[in-house]
Image 1: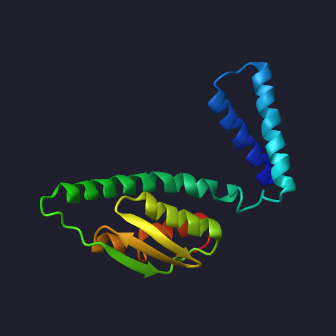
Image 2 (image 1 turned 60 degrees about the vertical axis):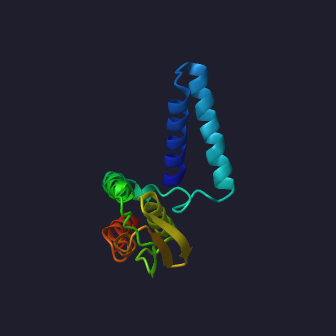
Length: 158
């Protein structure tokens, strides 16, 4: 039930954000549409911990600022590499096992790696990632990293 209520609130707030109009008709239409989507989602049995991971909300709110800082740091590093006349790149592939146990945690980790400039998650086999890095240090930096620990904390497990 918590997931359904949370999904309704999220959808309704998103509707209001996109609409920008607060007339009674539009607000009730938004509530009706959000309710219809929640009912359809419940009927399809996709309102669960994986489909709408509200249980991770507090940890994710703490994780996002850290991730934005890491994206900025990596962006700066990649820019310096590109602007260097010697172009000191050393493309490298690394394979490692992340510590996450749930699909949501694995996807969050893989997408966080890909969002960080200079690294891309090429493959995400069950409980094993193949990551391409622009430099050897960048690629090896994802193995047993702070990002891995923080995403595992978001899952609620360690």
